[in-house]
Length: 170
Image (tube, rainbow, N blue to C red; front, side, top):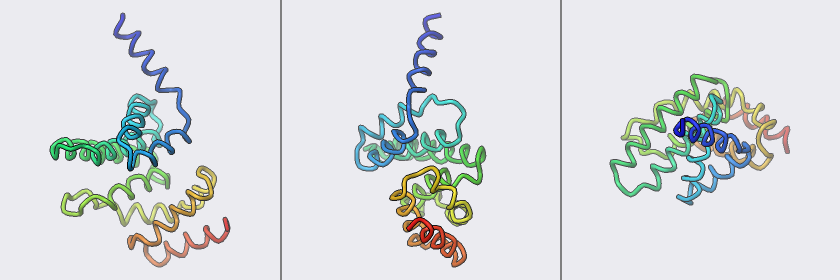
């Protein structure tokens, strides 16, 4: 009984988040291990929301970045890729989910073999880029677009789609 009560309290505590807080912690977690851990704790027991599952995968990748032990790094990274794959399968056309996975794979050393979804993710992001302007702020929208265009993973038509959407926002 105590165990299920504590589990219910934990789930309720985790339900007290805002997506803007999740996004902010994700950004801070890149350089701040404490923010990465806070993000992980916040999105660990969330309902089956594909976007929050993707941020859990992102948090796992950030924990890998901040881990000192190489085995711990690889464990978190493997978990991250599995979690992100779940999120992508649940909502395959979501540009934000695809961008989380893309940006992580972009920075992972290629020899680890975790960077095989980048071209597909880049194309899906470009195809659905216009939807992002309704969910993220203008600065984030522009930063994502510019990052994608400079990544080298977008084809010419994908770059053109992103550029067109950036002109609409300007």
